[in-house]
Image 1 (spheres, helix red, strand yellow):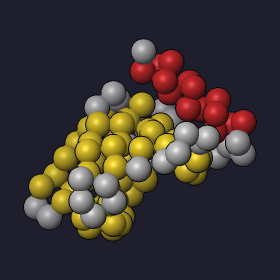
Image 2 (cartoon, rainbow, N blue to C red):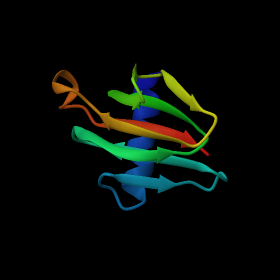
Image 3 (cartoon, rainbow, N blue to C red):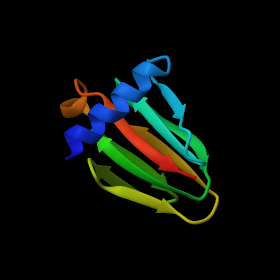
Image 4 (tube, rainbow, N blue to C red):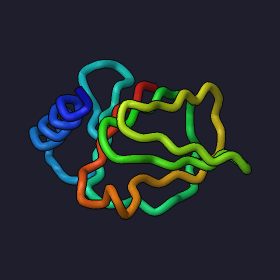
Amino acid sequence: MNAQIATAIARYADRHGGGNAAFPTPAAGLTLLRSTQQVLPQRMLYKPSLCVVAQGAKQIVFGEQVFHYRALQGLVVSIEVPALAGCGNTSLRSHPKGQFKRC
């Protein structure tokens, strides 16, 4: 099933300009994100959301806690919180990463 989800995200992204970006959808608060390369960790503020990885892997650091999640695994953020986040690793570098986020 995750291959079907990843394919659907890729098709949607391609129809809406392609590339590595965030792609808003007609569903209120639902955004699809796509990256075809490893994204180095960067500091960001996570707002309340549900993030699910469709393909590839993601790593997030909240304070001293490190969370790793892969295809069809997700993360629920219930409050605004600073984080360090990146996606991909060397074994997954050749596969596009896709995820969807509900805010």
